[in-house]
Amino acid sequence: MENLAFVGTIITIHILAWLTPGPLFVLIVRNSLIYSRKIGFWTSLGFSLGNLIHITLAVFGISIIIQSSPLAFNVIKFLGAGYLIYLGIKTFLLKIEAQKADHPTEHKDISNLQAVKIGFLANISSTGAYLFFASIFSTVLSSSSPFWVILFLAITMPLNTFVMSSILTIFFTQKNVKIIYGKFQHIINQCLGVALILLALLSLLKK
Image (tube, rainbow, N blue to C red):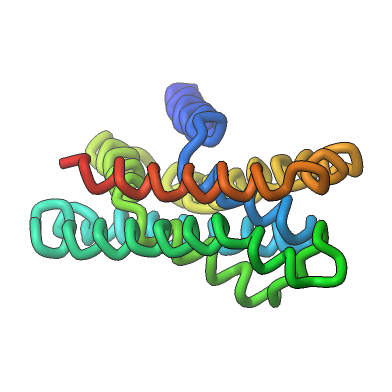
């Protein structure tokens, strides 16, 4: 029972973390609104694959090494912030690109692989994710929890990420939501772009 309560607490924390707007939250909204539900699902898969890498690094203690190395930590931090700024600028400028198209409220889908890459790179280059998973699994390992707890979390947390981000995708690809986006896409794109850039700058300010 104690182990079940422990696992339940961690999963609850992970769900609540998804309800707090951050880079991944903004990205899944961006890809769902600008592209399609399918692209949103593939982006979610990219997030989940990133989680698997974070968990693997945390279990083997590599995340702790990264945290203890200012150079490695800062390299990841600047790469992650740079990637978010790139996506933010690209999103901000989508209005200009759309105006050149025959259908200004429609954007051509990116490939499935591109969507996975966006989700994966955004997640794997997030220092916040390194800290989150390192703290979770260092607690699990130091508490001498049975192997099934580690395995269960390693499977459930990426799955939870996929489910939570997919729920957001389904919501933001509803017909009524898409109609609103079509009317105000230039403003929404600019807001999403600015949000990504601000989140990147905030990540750089964190020590």
